[in-house]
Each structure stands twice: as structure tokens, then as C-alpha cells.
Amino acid sequence: MTVLPIIQPDNPLLRRQAKRITCFDAELQLLIGDMVETMTAAQGVGLAGPQVAQSSRLIVVRLPDDEDSVEEYGEDAGKLYIVANPSIVWRSDDKASGVEGCLSLPGLLGDVERFASIEIAGQDRQGEPIRLTAKGWLARVFQHEIDHLDGVLYIDIATAVWRPEEEDNLAGEVSEA
Image 1 (cartoon, rainbow, N blue to C red):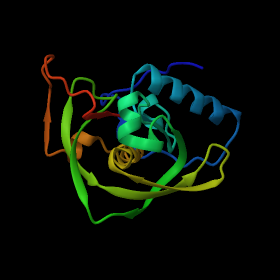
Image 2 (tube, rainbow, N blue to C red):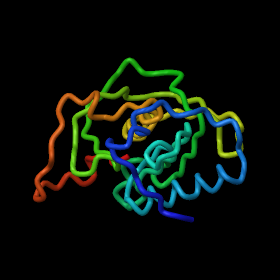
Image 3 (cartoon, rainbow, N blue to C red):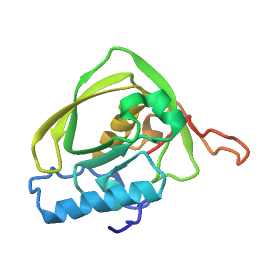
Image 4 (cartoon, rainbow, N blue to C red):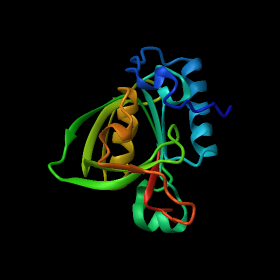
């Protein structure tokens, strides 16, 4: 597997709508592996195709699985989600604000309001249909990554964006996707 470069907003691909995946071949499987490797190396919890300069409607998501995370996220902790062509098919009425970061926007954080629970339809890595229900931080990460597929960055919808001071310890409160 290869760690891919993560692009930043100066690359116009990050602002374009990604293309639907129609071929679930060896090339796609390699991209999936590279994206998981890249997300892990960058210590992120999610990554979308456009973030690695691929116009593909593909996301990978994995919440931390350290002891505290297992207690907080239960069975979602450490579970790897690979979703091609994801779309949100249901949203809760409830919303929640939270602090987000992004691997494509290093050094920035923002307050973003997201749906508290969602249901996603998409395809697995073999192209088979899947449906996932997510709540809390997992729902936030999925929404963040799906936004990337439409060229939307969290700074576009944040109520506030800032550069944290080095002494600020926001570990566990920030979603770096």
C-alpha cells in the first residue's frame, strides 16, 4: 500500500463534485487500500477520494479504537467502513454542534452543526448495496466525508473557524477527517 498525498484547497479537484464509481476492479481495490493507509498514517478518522486527488465517490472511515474510544463509541470504535457512492437517505430532526478539523485543512478547526443521526445508502468495495445507520461522532464523520464528494469543505458551513494555539489540547473532541 502507498500513502498518498492529501491535497489542500489550492487544488481545484477538492471543490468539484466527484464522479460515481461504476467499476469495482483491481484498480479500485488498490485505491481503497491506499486511502486506508493514507488515513491511518495521517491519524485521521475519515478520508474521501477527492482529498487524495481522485474524482471518485469513495470514502473510508474508522473511529479510534483506544481504550477510551471503545468505551465512548462501543462497537463503532476501530471498525473500518468503506463506502462507494454514498448518499444520505435519512436525517434525524436533531442536530448537534461539534468541533471539526480536516486533513485537507491542517491547522484549522471549526464549529459545525450536523444531523445527530443519519442513514446512508451506498455500495461496499465489491459493489454490493449497503445501508448504514450512524449516530453521534460517526454520523458527523460520514457527513463530513460525503460533503467532500460534493466539493463542500467544513469551513463552508462552520459557524466559526479558528487556528488553535499549540497549548490547546482538543484531543478527543476533534474530528480530523
